[in-house]
Image (cartoon, rainbow over all chains, first blue to last red; front, side, top):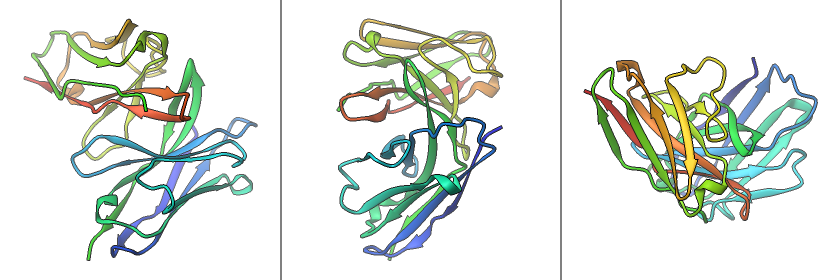
Length: 121
Length: 108
C-alpha cells in the first residue's frame, strides 16, 4: 500500500526556519497527484496550509502562511517539501502531508504520520 | 472561503446510533468526505463522496448529504468508535480542502 513518510520538524525559535519532507513510497499510479500540507495545532482541528498541483506548476497557500512558507515537490524522488521561514509561535502544530484523490471532488486519500513543529524561544 | 460547521461534541451509549452533522451553504451540491481521528494518530477516511465506504470501514458507518446539511451516521456504536470526526469538502473557488471544526464522539 502507498505510504507517506515524513521527516523534518522539531524545535525552532520565532523568526527561524524549518523544512519538512514527505516521501511517497509504493506509488502504484503512473500519474502524479495533487498534494497538500495540513496542520493541527495542539488540541485544535485540522487546518489546510498549502497545495501543489501534480507537476508543481500551481501552488496555493493559506493566508496565515503566505509569503513565509513555500511548497515544492520533486517527482523524480516522489518527495514533497515545505520550507517554513519566519516561523511564529502560532505555527506550533503537527504538520501532515497528504496525497489527494478525486471522487466527486478532492479528498485526502493518504496521510503522512505527522511531524511536530514547535516554535518557542 | 467555504465554511463547514460541526457540533463540538456528540455523546451516545454503546449500541445506539450516533449522528454527526456538518452544515454548509448548499452543501448538498458538493461531495462530502468524513475522517476519523483517534488521539495521537493521523486521520483516517471513513466516508468518501457523501456515502461511500473505503475498504475496511465497517458497514455501521454511513453518510448522507442534502440541502445545507451532511450527516455521518454510526450505527450500533462501539467503544472503539470514540474519536474526533471531521467533514471535508473541496473549495473549488480557491483550490483547497476545507475541514469542519471537528466533533468529539464520546461513547458513554
